[in-house]
Image (tube, rainbow, N blue to C red; front, side, top):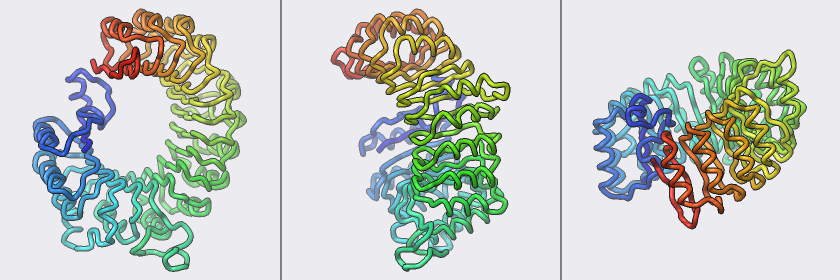
Length: 482
């Protein structure tokens, strides 16, 4: 089992780990054996200000059932979120747990096919009544990666959560055009699959509350997307469509036209999209804050300058966009219409990237860019002095000299990734200890010239350092948590 627990920010700060992400704090990623150890952890959390847990790969064994009963007993009334991904629990185990979670705000059932395979999930009115009481204030529901979700089971569950504002159906099998079981267009109330018509009905009923929708990796067609975004009263703030490879520029233009209030849009790996989609976003989504275009290979510099006119744009992910150089973004920033103040920018694997000049940038990823040189790093450090997070993993062109020149300009840096940078040695660690005193996390895994002695010296010099990832440094395989 893998158990995670979430603590409020004030509790994390009290324990000396300020700002850590949710669901990562207690025993994050730590495999717990199928023994009383997992039960002891749950009982131990009973006295903590815990508000969320995630337990993956539960099954129908007696131990799993006991774990769920203990969660209900010790944490139930205080849990605001619970995640049970990739398990195989039974409906009886689900019903022994969920009705006790009366404060639940987020429920993750991703990959939990065992609940939906038979088609009888929540078929009893008594069960639905109990679940409805517990999920009356549920705002977030994750049903991603479910192979057996049908109209009937989807309707039974969502009817118990009238206040839903976030829904994920990523990776689900959805019939957007044709029902293979009936040999006809997909209709509502299917017991075998989830249909477009049923999803449209749900969106119409939930339009007044729903603000976030994830349909990534569903094979949604351009026509289906156009019909979804036109649902009367629907006003989305977040739309995620990663891996929807059939989507076209005209479909994204429709999204921009009918959902102009979007603040987050994820079009990663939508490989048919071109600069026309980017221009539609730039001209219509004036309130957008986060835009993800990873591996959208046909996008070039042409539309990027217009994105710089979006005053709310803070996060831009262009990882793997191999035709991006950055020149047009810089032109856009220098134009009189420029308003964007990027805080996070990812250019990972952007082969032709040449220019990075964003003074407001806080997070930057340049990993897997073999063209990055010492001179490039110096330019980045001089033009992006506000960086708090920088990823330079797998950049073979970097050396101690380059880091020595850049470090004095990166004194706000808190997170630095240098994995597989074979040109760096212990000299670079000495430079970091001198100039980057705010470092909290450092990854120097598989840096051949860095030694464990250098890592230990760095550990002693930096007061805020929490984690040093040093796999295979000097022949060792370690991760210090300080």
